[in-house]
Length: 444
Ligand code: FAD
Image 1 (tube, rainbow, N blue to C red):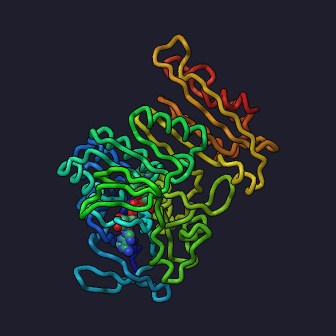
Image 2 (cartoon, rainbow, N blue to C red):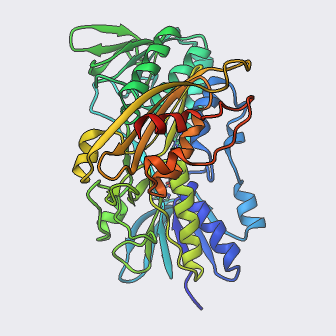
């Protein structure tokens, strides 16, 4: 009998693979080891739990452990940590309840995700200083807000987690400061979108400090201040969101290759340098659809999609995991911001393109129809071939239009082909020329 399909990590990538493999090949044994107690949880929903829009942390769970075990016939073992992989012997070593045992595998998926980066800040261990990566951390932040009733909060890092948490904590009645080391927040979203969101955060009362490096946290037992180079700002609660690092140690120690980004290198099927060992999700690389180079874009759809594809492959139908365009979207109070593809001139040039771009403001509905707002679209293309390279959009409404450009990026459309797309139109939804088409007309 074939040894089981063993999966390390029970969230987006791991559980997508488990479910799909079981569906495609019900006779194959599928064993998932998850070191925590939560599985199949929507980490993306955690800021909205802290904000109070999601009542119960358990509402973020898509499929419960019982459903996996009883309805999907997955041998799911929570509180089981994989501590070693032996790709020659095709076993993993598992630790649970203080005991260790070896589990043989026929195929192995590493879906260990990523962890929050913790810079060596003085005072990181003070009570009231958090990162937000796991469900237990979301729970701890929520408890802290409920019990300690902080009046001031500092968010270190102006990425999408920082922006979402700024909104969540302002909604909880807390005075929020955001500290970003770089000249702008939302770095991957481009200058126009980032500065529009920054202005909006300030309008909403967020005290935004750009080009401001945090050096540590002060307080006795509990956090009281954020320490800057020549200043200290009061903070009863701190959330550090300065990016994530892929959990690759297990793979690295087993001789599994990492790629140029530091995440696990994979081929188009999610295979590592060992034939029967796959990696997916936040711990793994994906090829970028524009540059063709390996990239590390730790986002939920990429993880779910790659897990699902690997489950299909392992069940006997080789299926590519799909590349990444780095498509992302974020809400900041009354604004939405989204991006896809390559926006940065230097990155486009490195990949051999000659980037040209345009930024337009266009209404989301005809002038006579109620509810029109303005959408700002930045569209980037290769000046030589006309190929659409990427876009960023920001506005109160309609930022999901980024998906039209993401489709164009995947399909390698030119700006003229994008402009000629037959998109839906009726006054309640858009003007005749959708803002994306208008941007393409202007750039063409
Ligand atoms: P993870 O979700 O990190 O899961 C990995 C699992 O592996 C964990 O449960 C971990 O305990 C387990 N594990 C690790 N090592 C071991 C081991 N040795 N043995 C056993 N188990 C192990 N993405 C979006 O696309 N849109 C969003 O709006 C969005 N918002 C987010 C908001 C927040 C606050 C956070 C934290 C993330 C957000 N993301 C968002 C990112 C998204 O949640 C991740 O991309 C996704 O969870 C990745 O899934 P994964 O399965 O690869 O890894």
